[in-house]
Length: 589
Picture (cartoon, rainbow, N blue to C red):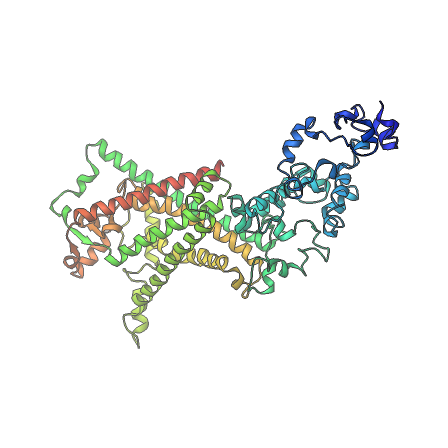
């Protein structure tokens, strides 16, 4: 019997023959009935056969679908014209949007944003299935309350997959680097590290469906709506906080001149600093290593020049307080490096591993701030010690002469004319044009190390506090300064870290005359003969002032030697390892 004798509507006859199932028989979807009379009288309806009989892969996907799990939807709820269903060869996106909006009828889904563009014929724009899937619509019925991590990460990646497509963005007169710029902000870095709930994802600023261009007054990123938009996550800020650039291109001089020149300045500073000091380090190493090799070739060990009875005599170089300050400085510095650089190089495997080991981006940020507080405390205490050192000599008529002499005297770390002459003498010595210059208590490179901290704290500390409390900072300056602070903080941190791990480590530890480590800062002691040989001006001054005997001190105990050696070498090796990681990342990753 032919079913169409009774089911004679067009959709069962001509419509069905032209449909995607036209070559199928009725019993491919409907089980046979037992009694024709009962079927005619509607007492017996042939049960449907599962669509999964033919569409097994789709059925497998649909078993995880939100509509199936929560709404008990079946295939025919969406494919209701099943008898006349035709394959969509074109305008499939329009059909999907129209299908979905039969239930999701709110205007935010279709009357504006991506779906509106689809309905106007833009096939590049996202239809419902581009973000939510077709048969595998995820159980992300909310991205803010349930399944937060998965939803934010999933939908942000969906946005990025299209907006990083160069050809697609070019066709639609949009920048394909929007994603790249976002990933260089704090929001993007933390999200890339795998912690999307701690920062704003795409939907947090642009909403989920009613995504409109900036010039549309209803857009969440329209200047009039930015304060309210930012207020969803931030509170207690000045309205100019909303001037923060969420997708900044610091290479674009015309659009972001302040960011551009800040970046250029920091790159210039990096190149000048490392160009000078790495050359200084290389020339110094060459000179000392060649000299040591020459003496060894003549059968004269370098250490033999320090032989004699006085070699065991030591003098006090640093006080216990200064040594403790240095240990705290080392701890805080490594704390800042280990917790900060994974954010800078967020896309690398080692960065993700370090953040995970610290318990996540939130914990890393907490540890970073603790280390910063220690460093700021040391900095402020150092300023206090410096002021007390300068102005402790009295005041009155002779006050100017007194503190001026202390400021530029032999115990001061302030540069003076003698440092310039010593630098020139050092360069001549590098090239065999003279003897190594004589130094006092402080060398010119030690003074630079010390004073560089003040520049570094102004740059790193100032920008760091700004980024730490961005809402409060907005009462002082506009939001785009946060973008500058981010550039300065990141690049100055790179400069400081590489300088410490290369130049400073060489000057104090890795130079062949001190290799593998000079324990002086940890033990506080220096051999008298070393003082006489390398800091002869200081030795002669102490001798003339009859202060040499009062500075003599006993050799450190075995416990102090072991502890200082372990701490010093561990710090040294950790710095070297981290330097290699940074250089590899910088040049090859």
